Length: 232
Image 1: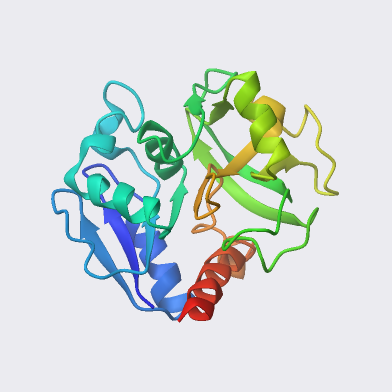
Image 2: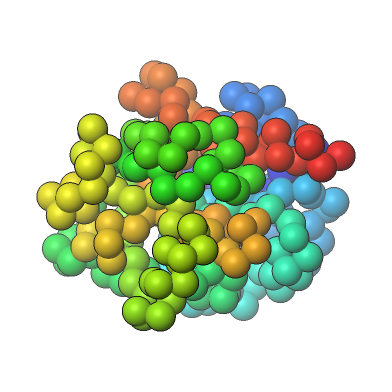
């Protein structure tokens, strides 16, 4: 099994993500440069956080056209596992691999803080090791994390059990007060129709070691590795 971490000009969590896969999850991993279409035989792709292309125009709007993303789209359409974190989530939405869009936070301020997430589904390669309703602690750090989609898309996401995570209290209660950015129905992460693409605003890469305050994020990387192992 081999993981690939995309690198765009402006990425600032690519090394964090690589570190988790390599040093913590103990899986083979390589960097994938934005200007290359070669995915180097990777079995899973990680789109990290940061400010791809400086977030010019709007977040993810330029990155979606990068040569590497053309290969990632084909990879995902063929069932390959792709996880986008923060700016990666924004890029996947812009690329049409996930529904909806990430708008500016309701507060109009950049937010960097710890959050609690209620697991919405364990029916995916990223969450199969979790329990429905399980609470995870992960930090956020974004200006445009306010998830939005139209009413038809929202109903489809709920009907198909594709809301992966919602912002919640420490006890797992989904409340307006627990919503840090104004996201529609507290949505923090969603799955693609094929369930092989996940996007989430909180950072599992920054919460995979106890010295960072939480190791809950590691559960997602481990679930991906286990899912890949079961295919082989």
